[in-house]
Amino acid sequence: MSALVEADAPSEIDDRVRAAVAAVPDPEYPDVSIVDLGLLESLTVTETADGVVASVGLIPTFSGCPALDMIAGDVRESVERLDVVDRCDVTWLAGPVWESTRLTGAARTRLADDYTVVLRRKDSSLLCPVCGSDAVIDQAMVGPTRCRSVAWCPSCRNPVEVMR
Amino acid sequence: METLATIDRQAHGRRWADLDEFQAFIDGGGMVEPGDDMPQEYRDEVFRFIEFHANSELMGGLTERDWIPHAPGLRLKQIFLAKTQDEIGHAHLLYMVAADMGVKTRTEMLEQLFDGRSRFHNVFHYQAVTWADQVAIAFLVDAAAFASQRAVFAECTYGPYKRVLKRIVAEEGFHMRHGEEMLLRLATGTPTQHEMFQEALTRWWWPAVQLFGPDSPPGDADPLIRWKIKSERNENLRQAYVQKYVPLLHGYGFEIPDPDLSQDADGKWQPGEIDWEPLKATMRQGGPDSKRRIATAAANWADTAWVREALELAR
Image (cartoon, rainbow over all chains, first blue to last red; front, side):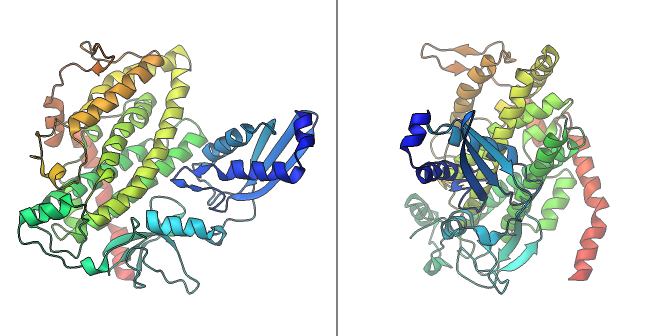
């Protein structure tokens, strides 16, 4: 194992660990990576007496999110599958607080196009992901999940969900 | 690029000369949007289907809620809290889509439901007696509901419903994982836990298998299949379900409460003959727990009248 570590430059291992974390989808959006959702906050790989340990720091979109254990387990499993890592520790960090601005462009597009879920624009208005109307009106402060509220587009008559 | 969200804005207000022309549109992969002048028959069928789905999400959510205080441990309470929010949220979205179809208002749908004049899934007409029942619901019943929702999503020619289903299916998939985890705990737990789940399985197996409904009429006699709201006949969904869950439950050492369950030469599981009386009874609100469930939901609705009034005043 140690020979392998020496053969790989540290940054190369970091990249592989990062890719393994990025391969984990969000349980509620099965085709969106948790890295694209902005959950990954820190990542370090260190060599210890126990072997190579990857420490992954994640932040939850909302505290009390019921998916945390599942996500942590998926990340651990994905990273520990790498031959260059002996152990992966996953920690949920208390800060920084997650904001919807952490979403990558790829995640925004996916959520809007496939899930009819949008982010509020800078002036707090909403653009309908279905018909492009900007007359979307807020409907309820909470939706099916803690991280989303519900709106309605009177133009195309579709419910729209909003990342809070 | 064509995505699930994109609507063809040229398509608004389309009309079809007759049902044959409409059928050709559906068969050609067409998606119906709210602004279209859809045939009344299609509107009524789709509305009825969405209303039934919305009612089921709401009644299911209320059951999950009942178990929040009884769920063993903080983590499971958190999961049940989130599941409750999910189901009620799904009901909310579905009622929005249904009400927009102009057949009944949202208030009419809710009042008829709480008045015992509306239908919802058979499984929510039974009582969850122990925690193991709740696990059986999460593992068995949610899986059956998930399979049938996925089969609707696969085609689903009504745009707004299909878009909501995309999120519902993703979230129900997440619930399934919780169900598997909870089952694993009981299955690998103490003999008492194993026994508890066996008893729950005996109570819930038949309702879960019946959830898919009696077999659809052959060919395209079922308008829901003809208009591609459903993509699969009830019997095919049930067969696939039985093939998956019988070996899984046997693997954990549980017994399926069906003495006539058999395996054919190809290894395919064949359930014994299904008695449809219990399902029919639930459709008449005559299930074992129908009255209590509907009364509880109606009492909740009455108790929260002040919230609706306050919101109305604030508007």
